[in-house]
Length: 185
Image (tube, rainbow, N blue to C red; front, side, top):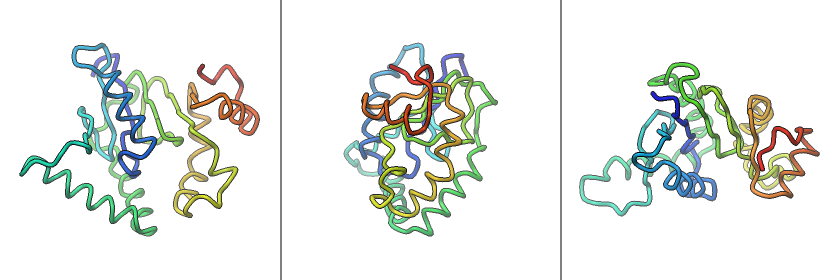
């Protein structure tokens, strides 16, 4: 792994092209170009050097694994117990194929919660909103349980935090008491 490797949490058991999934997909397509200085390593519960293109049209045989994965993910997402179990299994197997500790230069977490299994010299956390804290009634119990257990420890581990807007930036500073120096522009 070279010194410009970037770990990206690509899925996190969320719909692959939700708002966050779309951000990861589009930014990754633009940042990680062939021949560029950055070498991405995506984390989907396993490590992969390729961006999982779940938007590609199905072709006979080539996308059988993708269809199975999407079907299984749909079943897991729809069941609270399966979702919790899947998170535990993913956490238990996260070390498989894991790069050496701090071998990656950057771990970018695009979806609120830094995963403990992912190591890098620097950690960048994206916070889109604080709705789980401010409006818990909008979220399913499983999401709140995961968020409440992992969000604040991840915020503490982040070297830099970026937000989608100045409104969220100010909420993060005011509510989480994060100094402006830890927030990207």
